[in-house]
Length: 114
Length: 113
Image (tube, rainbow over all chains, first blue to last red; front, side, top):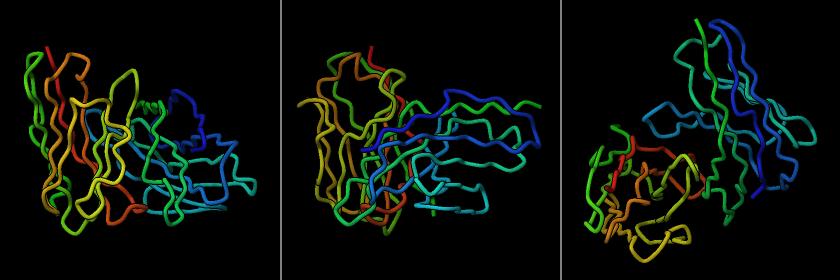
């Protein structure tokens, strides 16, 4: 499984756009990039997943450059309730791949201040 | 849907006692996962079931841990005998298929004294 590196913590203010970047230099051809969010005392929650270029849903956007060695999770206009740990994961989504073995690193603790 | 249901939410026990954690996956999901989360080791996959059959148990720490899935709507993770180092939050997750998005339960916080 490709290793990921992301900042340990980030601070932001309400209403700002937050971008969290994850490095995955050893990403393989069949690997997809997935981001999860975890609030205290809760299980991780899926946010977004992508393979290349840009993916957008109602919660966030995911930007992946052509070389796929990094990705950026973008949260528009954060609020206090977005304070959580954000995990970047990389895994093989092909049939028989091991993507189900979600490997959660330390994640990025995002603190949104008033 | 109620989401993944886990019980109990909190468990405090003494070393040497048997602990049983329970999970009800989301209806219609064929894959079930048990994870353990600690500050030191983060979130680790313990075991994975597909269609009620254990597929990958390489993450189960030792013989004291066992997991069963007697039917599509119920799974248990048992620790016997429990030890203080087993103290952690145990999460159950389910997905429609092996490669599909995993939905996590609220977790069981276990403290072994």
